[in-house]
Length: 161
Image (cartoon, rainbow, N blue to C red; front, side, top):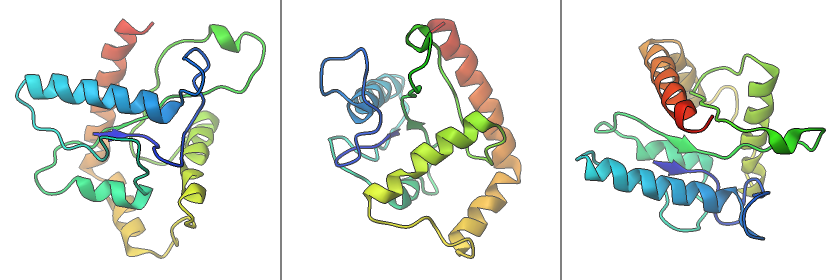
């Protein structure tokens, strides 16, 4: 379970929360509650972070090793101010893959900008790890991820209209 952002990377500000609350705070609380519920149901959970600390994007994926069935990263969306944006509600569910829409590319760019806060550059396109990620996206894991994302989206959207 990965609570997005953390430490020096606050993520998005929370418009309707007490002053100073940011995405890193909200995602950590959601991850803790989800962990507690999963463990209550007998499902083992490993957290990438349990406190307000920055875990590098490159250091998050190794948390999911051989015994790992699923890697979930929790984030909170933000919208640029425009007419009616404060009346928008709902949920997005993304899975690892190439961003195919303008909205998906926007979200990917925002999330990948966290590398700047880590003092790192984006990965080299010739990096073997990047090749492995591309391979995984192209096989059964991508199909399974899409099915799970659809299930999550439908169940969460029923609770968060």
